[in-house]
Image 1 (spheres, rainbow, N blue to C red):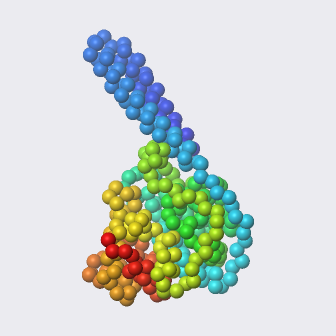
Image 2 (cartoon, rainbow, N blue to C red):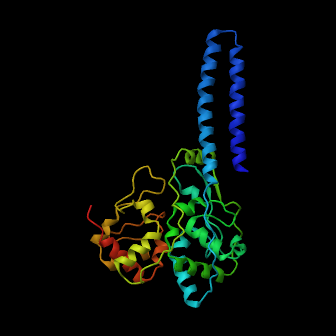
Length: 316
């Protein structure tokens, strides 16, 4: 519906400009006549171009698709415990604004441009997921497509799809174990503004992660750089801190993160304390946009693994 409104608005504006151009041609004074026609022509070209980009954005918004895997998660206590750990240390950063996975605030408010409204869904049985199959939840996490086949933009921008197959199944098991909490999320949860659609059409927004239908296997859990690399593959540190974790680039859509090689100057205990308290060894408080609280809920082995990976990064 919002797409139809956006296009209808563009068409109406172009029609208005055409009418104004016709009226300008009827003006008695030459300066008014040709000046008006010239101004209307410039505006019409600008609006038409913006409208074309918006139309392309609307098409892009509806082109993402991915198959639904055929699976049924047989939950075990160990699986539920692992899923809870992942949810606490990752999913909760967006989906637990008012309660455990009961939905989050509008992510669009934290973006530097008003490209739209994006509300992380209520993942408890109070939300729509109670009607989804396990395969549909798996697809949403892995490829950012919901049960109705709609693109989940923010999910596809994140690295959630890099969770291993077993870890996604553990998250599903944990979600299924939760009591119903909070209110159902609006439908659809993602709503691009006209500006967002135009930027999407112009290729000015981050690329959605490619659809992936293969298998992802995590290394054994241990306080090692190898396991730390896996943890950071699905955490979204690189979205803010740069692809090499050496600092974000000015002008990027997510918040600008600092160079994480600073961790080389910290001890492992200092790094873990920073993630648990939000205050670094120099007494600086981490920004509120940094999801240190959910990350700090990881256990000591996981935080040690992240430290080992960061400490082993090449010098810049």
